[in-house]
Image (cartoon, rainbow, N blue to C red; front, side, top):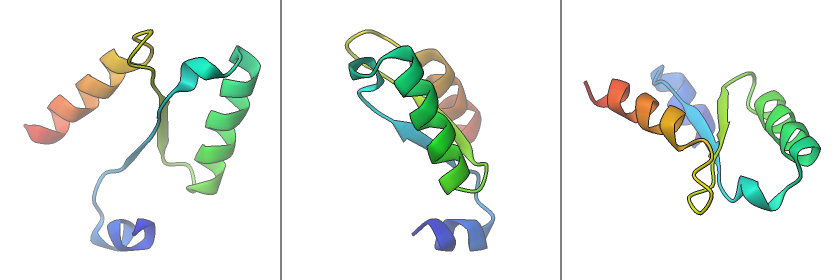
Length: 66
């Protein structure tokens, strides 16, 4: 699916949920590793229970829908 979306040239953001279950250093490592694995695509860590990363995610979604 990743390759297909890349081939279409669509914007992509990788969202990692439940980021609150990791320590700050673990979360940073996970975000960096995911970004590397997906060739530098934008990666956001979110937690709905602790409201982490939701504002940037909503901003990206709003911009994509306009």
